[in-house]
Image 1 (tube, rainbow, N blue to C red):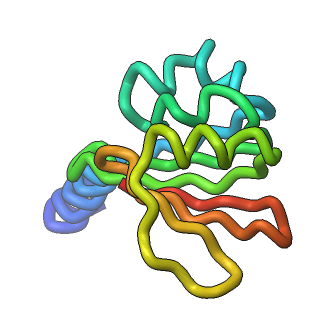
Image 2 (image 1 turned 180 degrees about the vertical axis):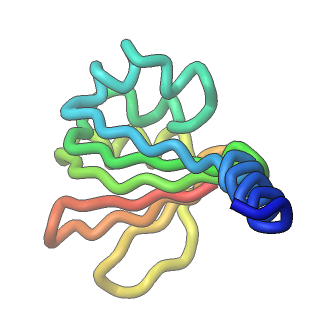
Length: 115
């Protein structure tokens, strides 16, 4: 390998290492709590129960993240109590919970969040 090619390869490896976007899967909210996803700020505490099948990713470089999940009816009263309702499409429910924006699809019992 020639020197310029080796330098290019090292640059690619370095840049790839700088773009960290860890992904995690939690079967239940309890699994996410045990793994520390709430205490590290990747998921809001309001999801500490009544959610499952959580697919979470976050970009360490810019402290942004998102997740998708399934939920049960017990989540909605807690969101109404602890979060601010936001305008939403007719078939959706939207909430602002601190830095987290949550969108729920009550027909599919699926949710998405971003922060």
